[in-house]
Length: 513
Image: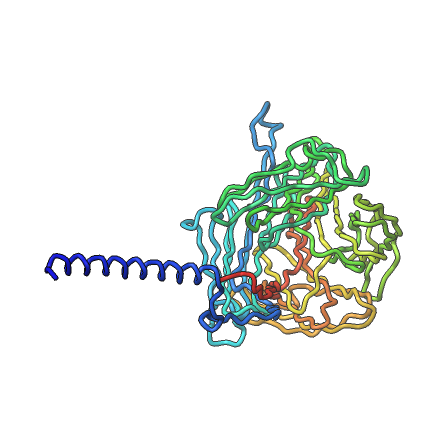
């Protein structure tokens, strides 16, 4: 056989074998695609129906301290003698950090480079672990940034400002606590009659802008009001914006307002200023409410105060309002609340032994009071006081140059004990006083009785394991206008409790990681 024939035979054989091999490979590939593979070749994922429920608490908080009391309209119109003016207004602020706080800084809001204060412990070797700071404020709000070693009871920061004047259109005393940011806040406000401005100020300390939704319920009818102005407000990142609530909902005896942020936590306060022509009728900050309750108390009332109570409930309910005294309750008035409508009750002048007002109801009720005093020439001033929020640990800072009286009230039906700790401006302990209060009764303590030697008590912390004692301080200023100018304000205690939230998760075998 010739070599040419052999060569051709080999080529044919190679081609046939190659074709057969290709057919076999294609067939095997088709089988692998169609038929499922062995489970032992696949990694197994343990899938159960177990759920995880974890309670977590942040170790960093932010609190907004508003600017000095001011006028909503500062424009100059007409004769200078008739222009609105803040007069000789002065403002002081104080801040304190308790227990496991390793860093607390106060900065001008929206500007971290100016007027910064770092709270310091004058004696780190003592057992008190209190850091402090204070400043005089000319203008602008502040941000109190707190970083904690751990989120625990008794750990946290408090701050407050107080403004006063005996000249101009803001005669009297005004005060506000520094308010922690939240996604939603609510307010129960005094009326919007002619001459009253209710300026809602909203601050957004985050680096992301947000839009807030504003809802208002009034005193004239039940249900949410249709506003005369916009119902939403854009708040820039690290910025503030304001809305005139009196323009949005005029001629109401009282307002219930909710503010809700869509993007980031915000802080809000309401500056309330009242005028009768050219006569100052008082000013104060209205602060966010605590949770509604069927039994709550507003402290810091004194003999001769003209007192109005403001109430709001989501469902119709009956309410009893009583003066709370050292010896128990003295009934003042009963009221019937309509659902989703603000009710205002004129309680008249506080009697001689009244130290607060207590609200008891069938259902949960939002509750606040307005206490007013009159000076010469028809001038007046008022304090806006929210129902207290009892907690295991609460704190309060008192600014310089104001006089303070501590007011504590027991809203439960049995006697309660608590311990009030007092510190000076350097964070050094000046007193530790055990307080026992009878059922449904109240007591007061002059701040001078908590001072030591020449060191004035300006920082307070209450340890109350019963969580039934609400408290605050009543602020006045000595010799305003040679005692011719009325001036009063109130500061409520701030809970020093960890904020908690529950994180819940359940495994889902349908999700492939």
